[in-house]
Amino acid sequence: MEGQYVFRVKVRLEPADESVSLEPSSAESTVVLFRRAPEPGTDGWRFFRDSLWRGEVNDQPYARRLAGEWLEAPVVSVSFRELRADEAYVDALEAAIADDLEAFNAENVPEVLSKYFGSSIRILDDD
Image (cartoon, rainbow, N blue to C red):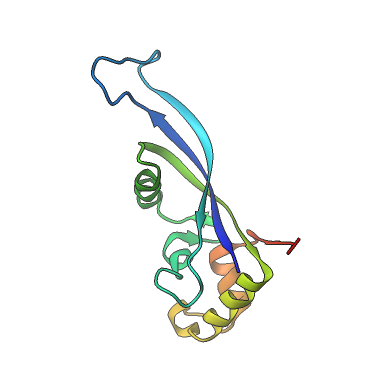
């Protein structure tokens, strides 16, 4: 069972040493960041509830701060791309959501998935 959150992150490069300079004074690079999704029902599994809304990052300053910690680099912007997971992960996620619908203020699992992920879930083949 495996799941990953996929983000597009724009980082700013800045020299750590005062004797080093960049031309221009800072540069930006865009990278795709893959972050392992916690196993449903374990600590941190509701990350999507606190970070996404309709398939978008719901709080840009918070997302930039998190991504900056993950990358140990200044982050200019973050956008959510998808939850990329195998079928077993998605099944476990749906079961964990169903067991805790009240925490999502929703009536059913499809509503929760739509509310937070939009249509940004990609189920990977087991091959």
